[in-house]
Image 1 (cartoon, one colour):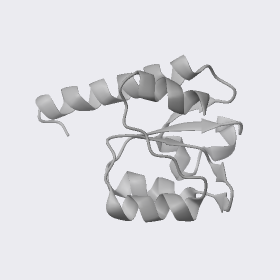
Image 2 (tube, rainbow, N blue to C red):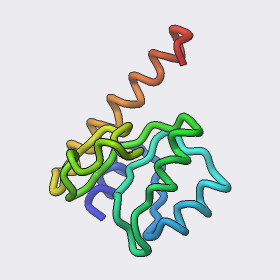
Image 3 (tube, helix red, strand yellow):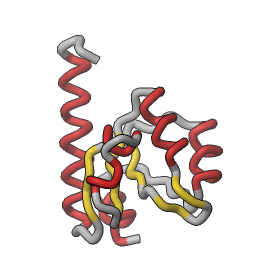
Image 4 (spheres, rainbow, N blue to C red):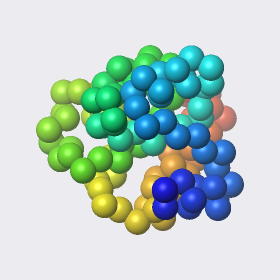
Length: 111
């Protein structure tokens, strides 16, 4: 919840999902600019959510206690990785950098 508060304080519009199922339902209705993904949610590993984000060209930050090396050949490897625990400021910074890079790519016609 510290991360959610930090993101809101920085002006992000934040929605949370506690399960892969809930995240999938939310993605049926909305197209976010960027997502923070935890690999393990209440109902299991959210690989399908990561695949969906990749297919829809939605950038994501992976915030996980897992080692990144365990996920080299998974969809999570395509996200920007931040290991748990991390200060909320690190996640805010990663989101801003990813969004700024995406904006620059669109402006230059590369996205």
